[in-house]
Length: 197
Length: 159
Image (cartoon, chains in turn orange, cyan):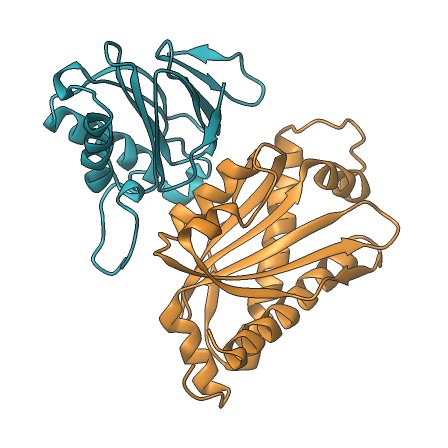
């Protein structure tokens, strides 16, 4: 993949995640988030499998199918500890347990963040990107990530755009990952005058 | 004992002894083939049911239709007899059930495809722990043929 394309994907991730964490920040009475420089890569399948490490660590995964002018898949992944901190801050749940209320709260957080991300890209490009109802899984990172890749039916070349973020003063960290269908992000690039990628 | 981790789309094997492990099976299927006379064990980590033309350069182990024959070849190459091979399988879960409410989940499609292709090659399935809504870890002890499956918050099972 050439540098222009990588830079373009990173810029998309920056804008999308910027909006997503702003939405989260508003839910968390203004707590600020730092974004780690986005990572955009075209990975061979074997490496994509390893892309999210800590295969046996428990994570919360929120998964969305993107339809419209640009198709793809999005995942919001965060370690269980971070999810529990979010729940404490958002719904005052100190139990440290994952009950139905906690699950639906996490589903809603994921929904708001992913929708904010896609809305930002939609506005910029004038292309429709509509998220499905999110699915939530709390399980081994490897199983969650693998199910995301299978849901996206990835081929031997996987375009992955990831932004990591963490909160100031609270131990919250997470990842937002966009797996665009390859032909569709070329469409965005053309619209933005970036030419053929 | 040596332990090898089998990632998505890979096929690995041992003769006599060794542990073949796959971590984080969601909708994927871990499949083992075992010849208890030759002590040959093969593990595959199947990602999707059917190979696709557009997926150029995909390893055979990625798909059930190409993976099962490739696993059999590997076993035979190590001295196994196809007629003695027995299979076990784990995985095929559906972690995001609301996203496949109106269709067969990828996990179930994988279970069906692996079952079909094993049958086609005359290989009996002697143990399985499949479907459900949770991820699994699978370990295959080639010296005994024992396969253990673990999941978060559940007791380990031997299949």
